[in-house]
Image (tube, rainbow, N blue to C red; front, side, top):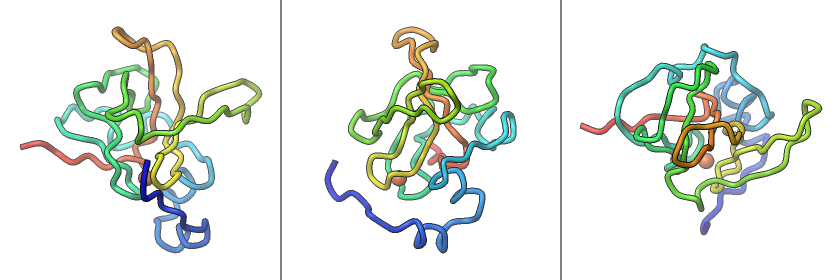
Length: 132
Ligand code: FE
């Protein structure tokens, strides 16, 4: 990925609403079933709420029952970065925006066919660009 954004946490903190900063740059998680995109069925492309990078298509969104927007595939592999996260006493894969570094959520391997992947993403980390 070219032209990565390197901005200090202090700068993000000034620019973002508190809940967005907490989740995207302080490793937070929105409460289950609270996010605006959990039940969303509209068509479009979900972009990073911090920098606008295209992350997921509504075509790969599915109802996981977890309370968070869930996708079985990234829109473009290069737009997401992955990191091992041992924060809560188990090993999980953390998913971040590859351009700005914003925390998006986690990736699990219990998703539907054809990938068996489940990207479990905070609504706050996303903006839906609707298709007409
Ligand atoms: Fe981003």
